[in-house]
Image 1: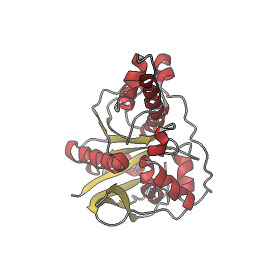
Image 2: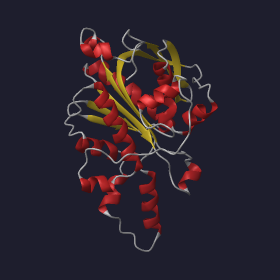
Image 3: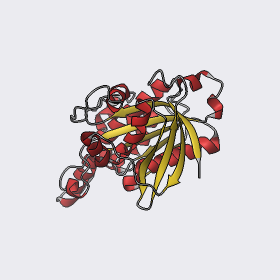
Image 4: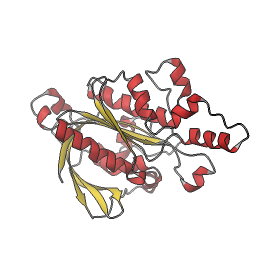
Length: 279
């Protein structure tokens, strides 16, 4: 299996990272990394009632999705999307478990509709006014790689740009003891077919060309102990070796975690414009 696409834009938020431009400076070694709790902005684009009901998982997904779409210059209302997360809203799940363990087991409708795994995709359709199809998947710690494969397959088969949004957030105790995700982290990539951008302006804005294949080689780790700890602490952060290559404007091959017996290898090449500018 070999899948190709170009990365047109990136959105990112996580511990010590407010957005992709800041993260690119750190990953390229031009700025030091300073770990801090993820600061999630209010979810843009939602009516006030829906905005009040969202938890960290939705805020994370919407923040990176909006950033990537804005940087790509594409119309978010027509952009196909893939959402990938190893779990759902951990705080909401905790609250539901507390309710069910108590005497009054009546769940609020808000708690219920936020408990489903595709909640972030539903809120995205409202916030972005998206009329395009979206897929939602879960593959535990392999969720980012599974989402990337699904997105690249859509790009290859349908020949249309696709938004990939991968995200996970922490669980409160006692759930945290068995699922120790430390903090919220999210990444979004706008991926486009190489052929569709070969002769247009989007090609000149592309950050990188990527080719994905399967491999048995071990996953690429990061030289920085703090960034490596972040990579290992959140399934969505498994993307960091790929982002490091893009941020450093470096043609290279990286291997990302996937299944126990199989990883994904991504060969990164950079168009001329990408070597001059990281969006």
